Image (cartoon, rainbow, N blue to C red):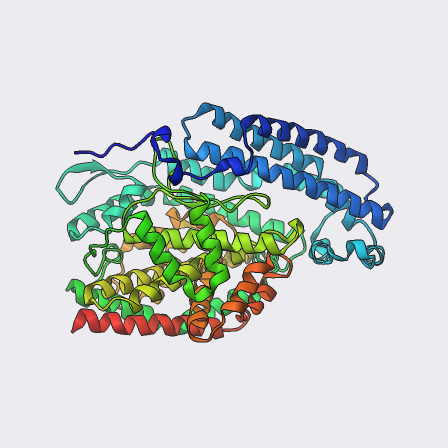
Length: 597
């Protein structure tokens, strides 16, 4: 029998999040929305007066903070009401209304930072010396670092007006890839002819049937190859836009412009590339293991994702998963576990799938709400990992918000995935330390190694290709489909080694990766995974849990690298990367023993 997905009303209340913690009723939400509109309109009284005195500077900044703080709260309520049932038109409208209000507020407060940056630095520092403004010193220091790259008001207005133009190539690729591009028919594991899609492609590459994998691979790339010149032109235009903006803002290059937005030195990027190069023999060994286990003459690109270990029977319901997560995270201490229990006991989590509910999982919330978690629970090991991952985000948010004022009550993207991935690493260690079954251990090890491969090695490969794109375009060389494919093929072979067959299709992988339009974003996946692996080992082996929790409490009160140093990881050096690769090697050693004995 087919199990029916429940409607929202049929889901037991205990398995839903409690949004009445934010607003008791929709009427309260409406009142707060009206208040925010009025407060944002009142910001006009400060225009042109920001720098008159330390008092006006403080009053203006705190008025803006108050508006944003309330805005985040109404946003979370509307957004999560909509996500729990996207077919509910009332909350779809709420979500649209708050998105429009966000744009209004952004416009109303846009005067502030240009007026601050127009002040002489000596004047601003004099204001900072007053006791009342000292708490905001790091924020203004951060703002002042941008000053050499801020243009005149007229020039900034021109660039702002052209933002849609600079984003046109990304938008064109997105529409083409998600709406216009179609693929041919393929066969699934049961021999049925089906229409290939991007979502289905990932599942077919995990098939045990090599013919199924090969057909999906060749069919998908046939479509991208037919449009290679168009896609090369789209990507080239986007890269030129990055280079142009970096030049007019007086950065040395696009990479410097991108990483400086998060106040990350370029050395973090280059250190990552160098360290991954040093450890590519480990990835080559992993490919060789795949060759031996699959018993194939050559490993093709379509062989890289099929599991090496049969799935384990790990049917685990949500209550059982909660107990596993509590035990896995116990090394973080009683204060950490107390927050996790709050999340379980006080309905922070929307657990099960219902009709109309947003797919996937996330941790959300605002400074004045609990850090909610959305799940679509299935009784399997992957969902236990998802619970641990999202709990990492939520406890990070909780510790930040309860230890920092609103102005530092969030954390940058560079740090965001570290806390969640650290929890995954702790869960992996717990599962391995409490289970001796060879097949179960092999399954967990394979899952870990595949994740590390995809996040550290693969994302670094993407980052290196992205850097080459910008440097090549900046040097005045054409980014044609041929030059892109030739370089990508060579880079792919460098990463995966001699046991990977050079399928001609993989040379065109660049044409289907949306991350190449994100502007030096992907390297943060790799640095975050490596840092989390290192942190988890420090928590388990060196009693670094207290230092780690200080990181969780820091928010944006320091620059990201300084926050990580609080946790005991210096991301400007190779040590954290070397340590992560050592753990990868240890686990690869064990998987080799288990699968080849």
